[in-house]
Structures are given as C-alpha cells and as structure tokens.
Figure 1: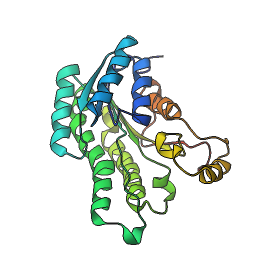
Figure 2 (figure 1 turned 120 degrees about the horizontal axis):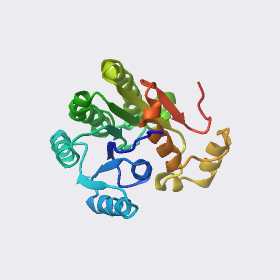
Figure 3 (figure 1 turned 135 degrees about the vertical axis):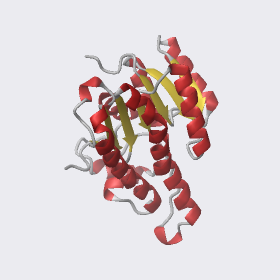
Figure 4 (figure 1 turned 120 degrees about the vertical axis):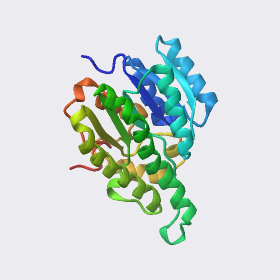
Length: 248
C-alpha cells in the first residue's frame, strides 16, 4: 500500500499527547515531519527520536494563536521540505468554566486556538496542495463538539465549529484531489485525564461499550489512515474514535 510514504506532514501540538503520537505514527509510516508546537525543547527531542529511527523530521516553534507566526512557520516548512502534503490540526486548549461565569477572554482564547488557527493553517498550506493537486487535511475535533459538555461552552463550540469548517473546505477543494476530514476522540487516556477523580473515570468507563479508555495511538492510527492514499475517497467525514460511547 502507498500509505503516506514520502509525503510531508505538518502536525501542530506535536510536542505531547495525541499530536506527538500522530507524528510518530506518520513518521513510522514513511512521512517526513514538520513538528510544530510552543515547546521547542520537546520538539527537538521528538525530532531526534524520529531521526534515530531512520525518519526525517524538523522542529518549528509555533504559537498557533499568532497569525503572523502561522504564516511565517508554514513558509519555513515549505522552504525546508519543498511542500506540505498533509496537515494535522491538533493543537488545542481548554479554559473550562460554567457558562454563566465564563469570561469573554476565555471564550476568545479557546475559539482563537481551536478554530481560527486551523482556518489560518489551512489557508497557509492550501496553495502547496493545490499546486500539486494532492492533499490531506485532518482536523482533531472532540466528542464534546458533537454532544456538548457542561463547563465547556467555549471548547464544545470550537470543536463543533471545526466540524463545520471540515465539511465546508472539503466541498471547496475536493475537485483538486484534496480531502478534508476530522477525527473525533472520545475519552482518551492522557496526562490531563489521569488527574480526574477515580469515581468519575469509573463512571465514564461504564458508558463506553468497549469498556476502556482510548489511547493516543488509537487516534494516531485513525489520522494516519485518513492521511494515506488508501483514504482517497473519504472526505468531509468525522471519524469517531470513542469506543462506541457515541454512535451514528
């Protein structure tokens, strides 16, 4: 299978968690990686790990909250690799608070990072994809963008908006052999979820038909598939990676 061999993949939020797993999986599958995040040290360590396994990767410090940085870094990536074939919009933040108490700044910060940044990144890389008439854009959304979540009006709205963005752009660029899809994780075991109360985690697990939390690699496998040649006839799709907690 052709997979992602020789493709250039730009992954945001690549320094940890799901983004790091996606970068490792794409590299293992033969892609060249542009690793983007705010933590330069972690990015350099990941790039060294990928290189140590025979892959090719470069670190690019990026705050996705800055439009100027997004434009500059994408130019640097194209200068380094010559193109961008695959974009994984993974970087995201939370600023949780009950709706009635949520500050405008917390709303704006989450929408800027989780929705506006993917919009700007897609705009920045799309010329490269249009030029070669091939591209894969994968947006990491969330189950809470599909079902909502108390205390996360900003986060849920940003992730629901990301699904809408996915479908709109998919319709615009499909004729150029560019696919745009979303991956929607459910309850994934990460350092962020590790600190949740034991009782809460047990109740969540009871609602998951597969009976376990997902892993970052479960998400990375889905992303790598959607980035591949084998997923060429899939676009505008939301791939749920949630153990069955939400179906349909």
